[in-house]
Image 1 (spheres, rainbow, N blue to C red):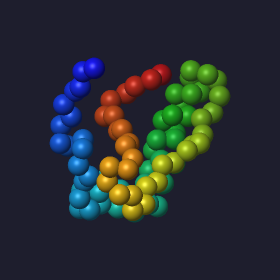
Image 2 (cartoon, rainbow, N blue to C red):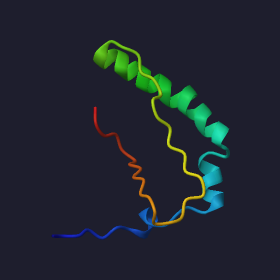
Image 3 (cartoon, rainbow, N blue to C red):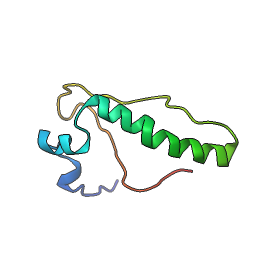
Length: 80
């Protein structure tokens, strides 16, 4: 089995200041999904499948201990 070194920026949690720069509140995060991401995904789904898209899942993590879960965020387009 081989392993790949993972940079520290992917294994450490951002501090509160960094998180506030991304989305200051949970309400702002929800608004960004519905006002920005959903319209873009809906246009893509309409073009690809001829049907509307919807928000089916939203991941919220509250006070989780480090090391208990892993969430992978990718900064490039993947999939369809």
